[in-house]
Image (cartoon, rainbow over all chains, first blue to last red; front, side, top):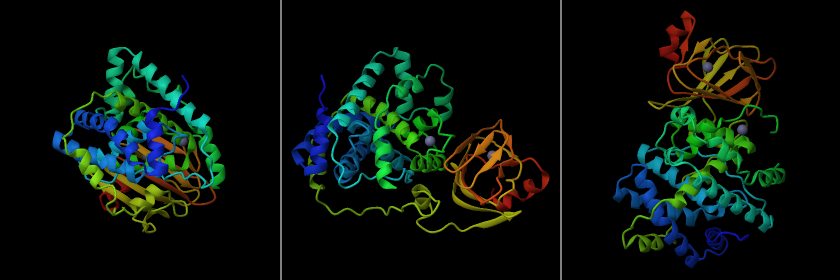
Length: 181
Length: 211
Ligand SMILES: [Zn+2]
Ligand SMILES: [Zn+2]
């Protein structure tokens, strides 16, 4: 069925209306998963809740940086969480790319948002069809348990295959850039 | 922009998203992504894989008060960390590391200059300034080296690299990058180990100039 995901809709309400009920829904969905996520990547429980707290506050405070035309909300939160966790572990500020800003007048494009969500749904299917050992390696890679040498040398790590199935917002990025220059 | 032909390999983008890249390399990846839409889209694809895995993580019980704690801070004033934008040829992540100040170049000989942007046990990120036609001293690598062109271009045994192009070199590669004639070539280079120079003189000066 072609519908924009519930999480994306909540995030847009947070971004555009500063809607606290929508934020509470996002919290209920993501906070318990984020806690498991950062604990799996090696953070003890008490510190894990500190990171969950920081991530959810960043979701609220940096909401205007979320662009549903390019990636689903879980992708955006994933990167915030990994960055916060690394900052904690290594006491550093992770280098991050420059933000791309949409033109102030840009109209939301529902079909593009929908396309991004549909690609994410396809990705979910692709991940669930992996053999258990492949799935395990993918999880290790994206949970930060492998070095970049490991990631490049693991045979059978279907990174490229999986990635090439996702095109996401490349056209949109090109369009935005035209507006920027 | 569309002229970029040497991009970030997939395993490095995945490692960047996952936080597995040491600081100097993460800086180069962030700088390239700031200049390259292809890699920005590819990075967002990797983030989407990570996000999907995050959605599927089993829920872990959180403390009863955590939600209230977060809600109590929603309206609190925030001390934002300063964000330093791109300046001239230097992308945002480089300016961030330079804390917004212009690079302070040090001469390393033959007209070549460098500015160490960050150095720690995780490796070194440096800016290199190479006049047209000049070479970076012949060297090989103890580990990974990423070189991103910010101005001008250089060529070596593996090809030609223009603005935005990224060269990925490892232990096996012994190369002599030479700046093409014309504008000086400015690069951001990251290494995880000190460079080993092949000729005697640079090896002797290496401890002093930290190249
Ligand atoms: Zn690229
Ligand atoms: Zn080299």
